Image 1 (cartoon, helix red, strand yellow):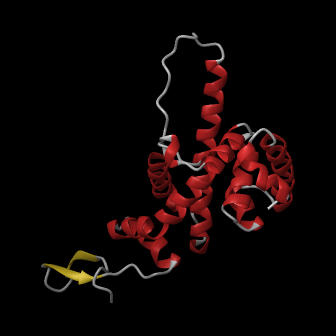
Image 2 (cartoon, helix red, strand yellow):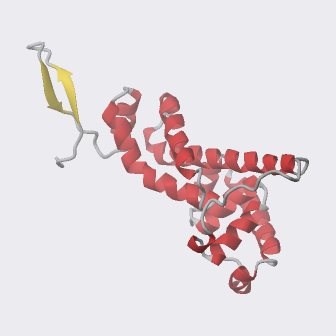
Image 3 (cartoon, one colour):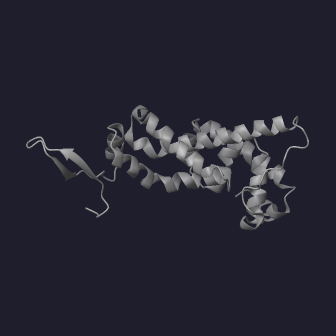
Length: 214
């Protein structure tokens, strides 16, 4: 067993004394979900250790460089732990977590879109917000890509980011978005058309346009 395997302090049934026993969370979704549903602290740690990098990547693909991403990632795990008892198939855990992450990202996008509409009617002397990241830290192509994505409907943006930027399989995109395969195909078709049309105004994306759809 690896040196870092988690341990649990348990009560001996024979002596009634407190002792440390080895109770590792096996590297399977079945044992992990069982541990989570039993409320084991080391299972919660194992969940974060195993899936945080994957979920962080997905949030980055959908949102781009975003100051709120760490908070969203935290919210994903909170939501997962609060609703883990609803997960009937432990083998579905990875896709289930991706679905929660996508839903959280989509809600943030919609919230910002609504806020932009509100700002259209706000006083013109509102203070400017500080940039999320210095422009020098973001490549021009990436900035242009997320400028275009920011102008797209939330559902199309999410589908496009998962498929065209993250490279997910169509079935995984559909699962993460909570829709059928046929629906995600239609959504992606609209998203590609929207992206291509909007990207015309972005010189940094000229190479992408010349190369056609990725």
